[in-house]
Image (tube, rainbow, N blue to C red; front, top):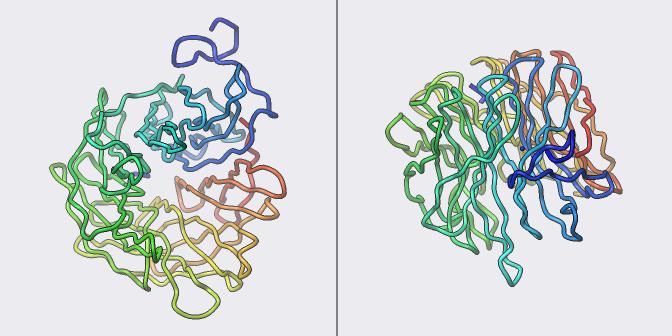
Length: 399
């Protein structure tokens, strides 16, 4: 599996009072980080926007949720506790049905003097409204959730990282949802010194999940190694992954069975104009292997962010790249047919920046991808749909 009114018409805020309506002018930037589609005509996308706190002169990040009904995207009210200078953002979403979704991310609390403390954040969708779901209090002061996968409304696994106020990526983090509460699930200790984190997770059953990310990040060199951890219903175990090049990271994973997963990301290149290239690794139940992946001919940087697999021999990966000057960013998408990866042309509405962050496919010919784009002005939300032949931009509303 891919995987709140005193004034009529205004949603209630987390304190039960009416949330004030925002104008477009009060929203500076916005992005969609992930999408989950229970069917071809039903998708939920989540992300964030930077906007003015109603009734004040302060700004913060707000969680963003948008729903697709097969023809139109609509912004949904999402609870947003006030944290001037910080805020909340949603990084990942998983829907087990049209009326059951879980989204995770982080709360950002500004701690003087100018340090941001991160805490895990979660919201659930019941088909009518989004509501904040409490997450466990952690032993460490800095943590966030980056990925979530739900096999039902009462079964989800979320992953991310945990650490200190100034270094929130000292350990991997996993939390499990049982329909009423989240609980922390122990993950293996870091393999080596350096930052680590789980970016993504995919579960085919409550007792079968695969998570992927990185470990051993070195601030001095900017290098890291790929990481995969498998959940068997009782404990997490590290599964050795290949590391092409001098540095690599996995950003997305999708499983169609416990013994069939595809993970994607990027890795460093040693020669030529391409300094970072796309990466795909396949799990067969006993081991991971690297698969050849294409890169745009004119790219200086190229990478995959997420992947969705509606079948064992059908996957779609999305990401982004930059030209060799590093000044223009473009979307990337590639399809897997069971034997090889193929680059697909994607629209680029932004003149300077385009990036696809998440994708969800209900069949090989039906996918929805989300991200953001920018020109000279602000960063805006982006959605693109795949019909089996081509990718097309789908208009998204501004928060």
